[in-house]
Length: 219
Image (tube, rainbow, N blue to C red; front, side):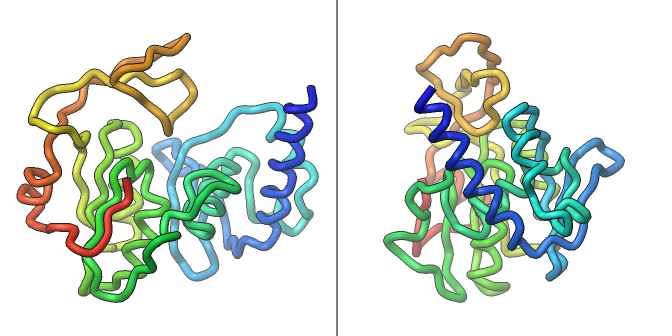
């Protein structure tokens, strides 16, 4: 019970931050994907989150926030706050640029790019003369990663739908149903879904996309 209370309190602090996220509008597109558009025009597509806890927390958002943020778009907004604004993997966790700050023109790679929230920020930071290689093995996440790249016209963002391994082979990834972020080739979960993905070495992936991440890599 104490752990649950702490979790709800931490989530409440995160939801409080959403009141300061510069959201212009949100909704569901013709593909059924939730989206959030910020005031600067950048658009993020993601997936929906079904949780009674988050349904409750949505109700405590400011009225002005709820006017522009639809309830079914909560997960997208949370991913924007955690991954794009704060540059982390999870709320309260380490920042992805804790050891190196990107500069214009950098060539970088993000392995496990998820749906592209952090990759979009990286692409903005390196600018049109830099390059970001976003590598994501999960087909459903990669679809949204590609959609986010195309919606924001980020030509400096280069995509690869592969896993990173020590050789070229097909791998079976296990993922807990409902957990879009974490997967494993070794762990087996209760209520597991399986994905067969192509995996390759970083050298081969960089050669294939014609870009080498010589400045920074996020693993």
